[in-house]
Amino acid sequence: MATPSVPWWRDAVMYQVYLRSFRDGNGDGVGDLRGARAGLPYLATLGVDGLWLSPCFPSPQRDHGYDVADYCAVDPLFGDLDDVDRLLADAHTLGLKVILDIVPNHCSTEHPRFREAVQAGPGSAARARFHFADGRGASGELPPNNWRAMFGGPAWTRVQEADGRPGQWYLHLFTPHQPDWNWRNPEVANHFDTVLRFWLDRGVDGFRIDVAVGLYKHPALPDSPDPAADEEARDAVNPLAWNQPEVHQIWRRWRTICDTYTAADGRERTLVGEVAVPTPADQARYLRPDELHQAFYFDLLHAPWDASAFRQRIGAAMRDIASTGAPVTWVLNNHDQQRTVTRYSHGADLCEEPDADRGAARARAAALLMLALPGSAYLYQGEELGLPEVTDLPPEVLADPIVAATGQPHRGRDGCRVPLPWSGTEPPFSFSDAPPQRSWLPQPDWFARYAVQRLRGDGGSSWHLYRDALQLRSSLTPLHDPELHWLPTPPEVVAFARGGRFVCAVNFSDAQVSAPVGGRPVLSSLPCDDGKLAANSAAWWLVDSLSYECGQRPPSHEAVDLTVT
Image (cartoon, rainbow, N blue to C red; front, side, top):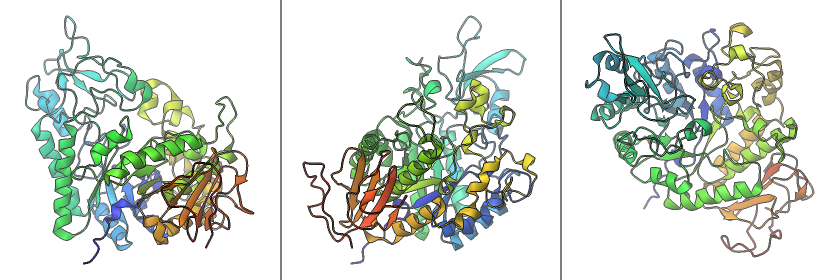
């Protein structure tokens, strides 16, 4: 009997295209679908399996597309539906999957249904699609509850009624321009069924679901015992607003829709959720066989550069998620987080000056570790170039609504969203034909060191490390084994085996250490000579066999004798 094929998404490496900053195809200084389409051969050469495309829907762009005004069209800023169709056709010809970002928790205040709700007035069917409520206080002048928005400020905004008087309040857990849908209203679920089918009919391979723990709120909308938690953590903390049990019925509904398309033509569709929950066990509940296919595992992204922290978080994911049969979806960077090169540049002492070379070395090592783990992985554009965060953008160009809401530039996300450098020695580095001052965010002159063309010509660059790792990940049979077995190491080293022959080791210390494996590695983030693993580096080996039964951890932390192929 033939062995059933493994669905592509279980071990895929996907590349996040943050559309505004990937490549500009029409010279207006903003990345677009034509630019993304022109970059597809680059992604195929790099060796990823597909791309996650950030929102391209019509939007006033107050949160750069995550404030959607129409879910079944394309914003002229990015192109049109024909551009989507061409991108999908070209991607599929190159063997690349395309996952579209969908935003079901909230829309834009310019969405026709929200505008209708404001005009319709209290008690209307239109307002029931959102969370409208009367205010507290003598004349309703206080918000309905004490919730705070994740991006800063109250989670409620008051509207002016048709007669000109102050009226009800509407809920928005991000910005006042992003009202939350009321998923307890069946009309909302029906509307999104139509949205999913619209894009599946056009040929997308699945959806990345923004704020997948949202959608349902506590039906009584009571006060939170810790109203500032979401705002301070900038994360889904408020238990009354996030991770309500009813949300799982939506993912079962969406899974059924995707499975119907998969059954019809045999082409696997996937759902990957932005699932920020307290524990890996909580995340596993979203990955039951009839719910989401994947969910980003953010615990590794938030881990400090520390062997114990990485070992613990990887172990928890393997124990609580992978053991259920679901793949872990690893991620180290995205459009909401400071880039690893900068994040890892700090020492244990936070007062210590950051070290750019140390950050770059650690980011390379972390990449090899992530790509060696069982499951799937998502890369963020520019990660393969070793791009650092741009930390000195002029205040007048900052565009993140978090900065506007909090007045705190350091909390913003603009620094990881600066347009990519493709070639040349000065801005805009072939990102656009527009003059440098027209790029939506300015590129620093030092981006020249990270231009794609320059790095592809340097065999020791970060780009080549990623490309080589992706090729090995695809070709090495042991890396198709879903199991992971820890190897004994000193405390500052993390090492594991897969498939009985593959070994990955990471040195988290600032000093050279003995490698846990003898012989020459098949790939290393820094030179690995004479049985030594360089400071803040990682390496991969192929071995003939392990000298003890996989899964049995020896009692000591001494190096295991492994014979290299």
